[in-house]
Amino acid sequence: MRANMRAFYRLLGERSPGGEVVECQGMVAAIVPSCPGRSIVNAVVYERPEELAAEREELARRYRRAGVRAWTVWVPEADRASAELLARTGHRLDGSPRAMTLELAGMQLAGAGEVEWARTRDAHALAAINEAAYGLPAGEFTAAMSAFSDDPTLLYLARVDGRPAACLAALDDDGDCGIYLVATIPSARGRGLASALLQQALAEACERGCATSSLQATAAGFPVYQRCGYRDLCAIEMWEHRQA
Image (cartoon, rainbow, N blue to C red; front, side, top):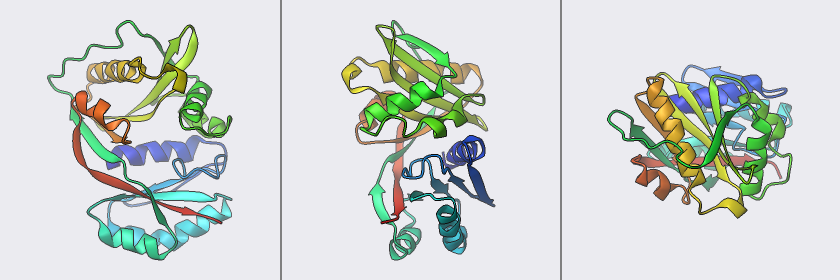
């Protein structure tokens, strides 16, 4: 899962306007100045705690220089040393999504069924749906999401009465299909739109030869993913640093 997350953030840093990637052995940091106030896109995924400890101050300097006001480090719950380091250097625990994985072999996947859906390159629609779903200002994610307009990321969009209503992104990395940016606008919730898109994305991931899928589940999404067969591994904490 962390390998897929590194691929996700590498793509964000490389393709977002003015973005950059800091990469050191098993660590990848996306610097996304087009969305300076949101740490979900300005984020660090690391493999070894000693790497994070060695690079943390340089990362802080790079984010400041880019004008990024909020950035986060994804920390597995077992790594208390890194959590303590980040707490001492001005980070705070901002969330604890669950790390979840799914073995795709033998899965019976129904696809999207009767839901009106399509694959799309319209990253602006995904940005707008995520903004509406999470109560963020319109346009907050528009520039950053342009990083996902082309392959290797696949964008899925569900519509209600012809209007964009739910979305997700799927990113393949070394046989794992990572699921990101899952959201449904408030007025369309309760219709199973995101679940239908997930079933479709996983069915197509199987056809592409992916063996597994991984994601980071919010409290609201956790039971949905559990019903789909995803296995709960652990919490993966978000330690955010935000300028006053």
